[in-house]
Length: 398
Length: 84
Image (tube, rainbow over all chains, first blue to last red; front, side, top):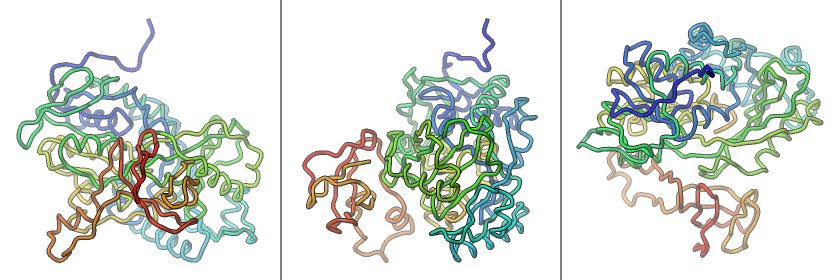
């Protein structure tokens, strides 16, 4: 008999918590609900197959070098969890702390970068400012010629940043959640909610109705669709975000390199493919595909920075649907519906937050109030004006 | 790449345009009279439907005029009968 990592149960009549979306965040949330709070009567409902949305489509970059205190706190919490995650889940997720460079190509870039390095250090996040010569020493294949249209004028460097194998992360959380009694239910699309005044009693799905004491939205680019069923609006726009991989190549790049200004980020996966991404397509879209000129411009940027890439072949391109918020920060916490919680708005940067968001969201759901790290990311910040503007640190994509 | 139907220039490549988001979001006639929640709604809340969506485009590398279209956010097709 084949040994499966998790079971494929029929939905039960009801659960203490129903999590909508079995991506990385949904699986991590279910796992920490069980592990940290003893809430094991949990179902994670997935419209398609487990971790087949953005969890299968991201570029796996992990870092915590965000500007503001609130962001540094939650992303650094996440990074610390990443550092113990293979042991925690007893699964080698190929977490590789190879460091991330964020290149500066103009004087404003340099000033913003140095400011961010200083802010990071004050928040206990490892960060250094590198000169072009130091960048060249770290990553010899970068073109640091001052003849470029946008020459490299320095970079921020976070040594503890890195990459992990996204599928293994999902499978590891799924197995661990399953072992603690969580039901992972695939091919189960939530199409509506059973309302009871200011609360919901459960969810209507393609596999029947399922009762729930609490409902946790965790559907990334589709969160607005669920919210509109619930009768409230979210400050989100869903956009296609494209990425690509090259064929398998010899190892030439052992650092993650990101450039906000000329719009590309790249790392080399363990197998050898170059993994690249850039900004979102401009228009709203749920189509999981984007426009080719976006790929073309990120390739142009990559070849300018790394002339050695010019002869590499693109193997595959794809897109995920990302939920972009006005301040490039997530929305995490309570909603206008009493027993419905929301975790969304991670935009182009959700993968890195997987463990931290799951941890904080589970705590928020378990206690019915925002976890301290989630409090600054409440929905009401758009009314109070206390935005967490991370357009600089959110890098290329927003 | 999308072929965007400019009502003055006809269908042109997407790279000639800038995207303007949801159409018909009017500036409040008396902004000072709004509550914080109403102002937040005007500033930050937009429809984000999976399906047909009325949206604005700017033909920045063409006639440099704004116009509204209805486009499907899954198939990306533009509804016929564009009205500027």
